[in-house]
Image 1: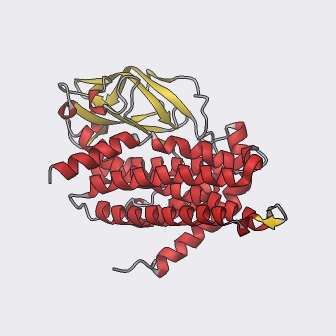
Image 2 (image 1 turned 30 degrees about the horizontal axis):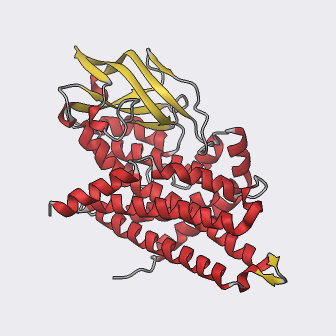
Image 3 (image 1 turned 90 degrees about the vertical axis):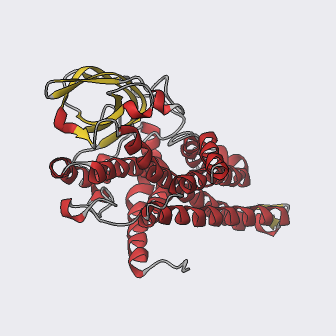
Length: 379
């Protein structure tokens, strides 16, 4: 058991850190304030391999592992959790096409996804189907050589901007077995979008409803087999939860470091904050909890990579712990800054707003506990 990163992992960790600190961090506050989707920055990162991290090299992907991806996402999120989270989502979609797509689909869609010439979205959630995703109502009926899609998806990251939407829809009866996955290009007739949602955080990526009204999708755009869509969606979420967990750790790490530095320079009662034992204890707890969350995340990433039968439970545990820890560390860092932490002149409030949603998306943390408990009780 070796907890040290390999030389290769250290190299792309440093590459990601350098890019994040120089190309993302100086602009992150503006992206947040002005709701800018930083397309050129995303493409610049993709040129480094971050647009297809675990996609096969034959279509331009980096061919890296799940743990490699968590290392990269942590570094990107230390600069801007919102933008890093979009990288995680886009990579999740690219993996779905790479893993379950036909060779024709891989060659058609992946080269432009890994360069982020085209952006992508994952469409599972609906207004009436959130945690109960298997109850989704968006339908697709087969007519000759095409599927006709009707329905709406909610809270879609990249909605209205992405070029490709992976849409989970009902092609059969009720329940998970009736769900299939379709690759829907953005220029499809009948595809439309709701207004850009006004959100607490995650402002550097657009979020909108996606509407389907008699949208004709070629039969060859079926991802995997008919009835396999829910399985594909859940397999993708195992990896997506790792990505969001890494983003929480990265954002929280940046806030922890800011709090630590603030304690050495801020004085009260004639002494630096760092001299007060209560704050020392708080800092120690923050560091310990972040380290524990990261180690569980790496453990879960290894299991997902190996397709171990425990992967879903461990991914859920890692996501729950990392996102709860991440928000708590950000909140403690803000408290350490006092009133300054509440001002937009300082970055911690942005990290706090961005990390809050991580406890909700990719499966709420209540659902993560449910997944874990069911696994524990059925072993």
